[in-house]
Image (cartoon, rainbow, N blue to C red; front, side, top):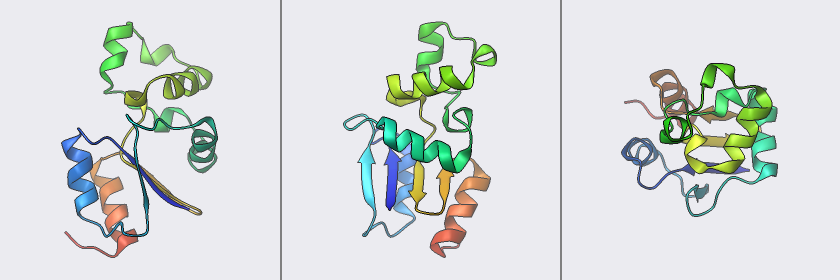
Length: 118
């Protein structure tokens, strides 16, 4: 398995994806094709946390009046399945590894994984 979950309208996602040869990867645009329960379960198995997959920058947080600090793992799971913007992106997932989000450390790990140097 080699999948990338991303958002086409996200400049950061596009910039990160452009750095790598994704020829043999399945690209999933999460607005058109939201993450399934099975895929989320697979991500959770690798991260051991729904919160680690949750984007605390989602515009839906403010719109829904959510207090992120009070959310449980069950809440994070339900929100991730409910709306695509709750997924921290991009998510690169293979049979063995997962890379979640666009923070500097994660992008550096991805570059190592792909053998690319900035």
